Image 1 (cartoon, rainbow, N blue to C red):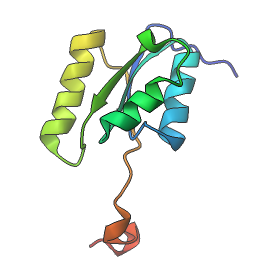
Image 2: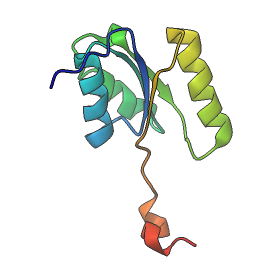
Image 3: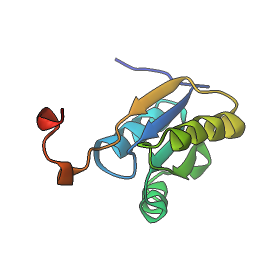
Image 4: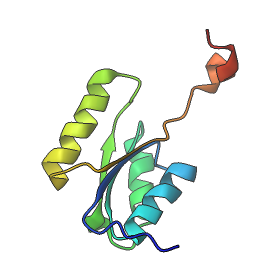
Length: 104
């Protein structure tokens, strides 16, 4: 099944590698534009280099565990692309805190 995302804008958190980066690539491949976010600017720049057309991608370093950072991501997306249609919360958890099932 072919999906067209022409004119759509996505924000993908946790997108500097792995599943998040693959999702961001698929969105761009389907005609969308994407904001990729992670905590590391260096990792984001490495991820940006994997896109054939970096004009379709904006990088924003942010720690989405903080509400102010999440709000900044949305406002930056709106300021840059003028809309936000798709949100992918792929931000990882911190393994130092243990398995999610044990968080109470």
